Structures are given as structure tokens and as C-alpha cells.
Image 1: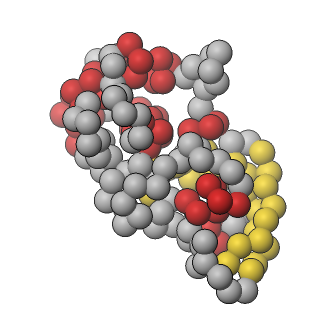
Image 2 (image 1 turned 120 degrees about the vertical axis):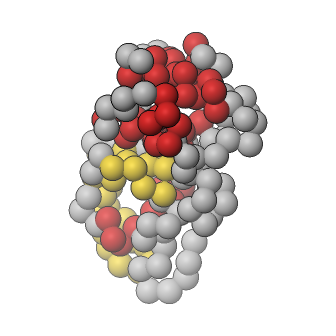
Length: 156
């Protein structure tokens, strides 16, 4: 986290209000992980290239490592912690398991968050899913299974 003067801000994260102080230059990713203890969102490349840090801001996917937390003051954020629960998985999480769409699991939270946003866009075919997920990398190479999981939930 950055040093410097702190500013007060609030976020609605997973339908819960959070008020905290953070430096004006703190990223949303660092605030989520370090200030609020929401470690489901992963820090991968820290340059916006891998998608491991993907969250939904007002329903739109963003790379939280590139987003200044102060820019989202007062906004609604959804992280992987707000999607399903261990005893009641979201249908996309269940599809990831059925299709073995994860190996090491590091990228999985970002893949699921990006997949949820893509599903809201109503992908028309497998190519649309592939293109829509191109901002999320998987070092293990589970891409065909990730596409299959999203396609199942999309009804393709």
C-alpha cells in the first residue's frame, strides 16, 4: 500500500457498506486485499494484463489493479466473495467445477468475474466467449474448459 495523506471513502462491496481511509493513489485491488481483507481477488501482473484482479464495478468488469480506489468512492463493487457460497454455488462456479475449468485456481476468481459480466452481454457463440474472455490469462491453459463452462451457463 502507498504512503501519504489518507482520504475517507466508502464503497458498497458485495452489498455491504464499507468506510475506510486510504491514500489517494491506492488501487482498488490493494484496498480490497489489504484494507478490507477480501483476498479472493488476486494480484497477478499488477499491470492490467492478466485479469486475475477482475471485479465488477456497477456491474461492469474492471481490472482492479489499474483502478484508483478513490475513483470508485460511493460505488458498488462485486468481488468473488459476493458470488455464491460454499453451500450454494453460483451456476457459473458450479459449471467451472463440472467442466474442470481450473487447475491451480489462481486466475479462477478473475475468470469467473469476467465470465459473469460476459454472460450479461449475452454471448452469441463460442467465438464471442473466447473474445470476451481474452483479457483473462490462465497459465495452466484451461481455456477450452473455461469457454465450455461459460457456454453451458449461456445455453450455447
